Length: 181
Image 1 (spheres, rainbow, N blue to C red):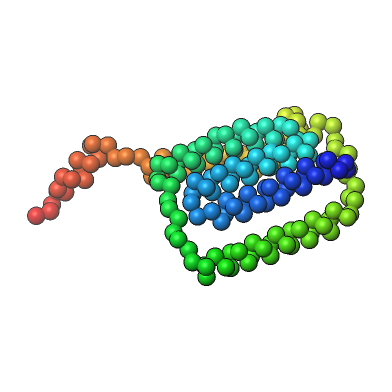
Image 2 (image 1 turned 30 degrees about the horizontal axis):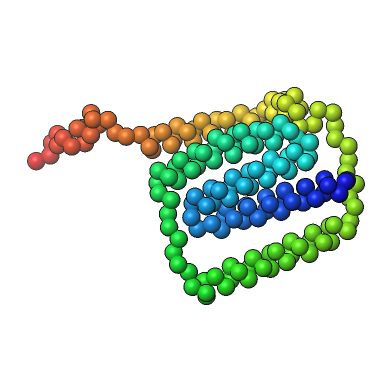
C-alpha cells in the first residue's frame, strides 16, 4: 500500500464518518442534506480508491445527483425548519462527546497507521459493469427482485397517500348520506 493511497483513503474515510455524523446531528434539514451530499461524495472517493470506478460513478449520478435533489426538493416544499437557541448546558454534552469521539478516532488512526496491512490483489474486472451485473443477476437475483418489488410498493403507497381527492370524491363526501335525518 503506497503512502498516497493510504492518505487519500484515510481522508475519504474520515470525511465520510464526519459528514455522516453531521447528517445525523444537524438540526436544520437543509444542512443535513448538505452533509449527506459530502458523505455521498466521500463514499464515491472511497470507491475510487478501491478501484470500483463504476460504483463511484453510480454513487455520484444516482445518489448525489437524483436522490439528494429529491430530498432537497421535498425539504424546500415542506419548509426548511429553524434552529432553536441552545444554552451552554445543552451544548456541553454534545461538545464533550465530539471531543471524545475525535480523540478515539485519532488514537485509532495512530495505532492503525503503525501497522502495515497487506493488500490482496483484486480479481480481473473488479468494480466493472460486468462483475456487478453478474453479481446482481446471477448470485443475488432474488434479493434484487425483492428490493425492486418493495420499492414499487413504496412508490404506490406514497402516490396513494399524496394523491389529491377529485371533485367527484369531494362532492360525495359533502353530500348527505342516505337514511340520515
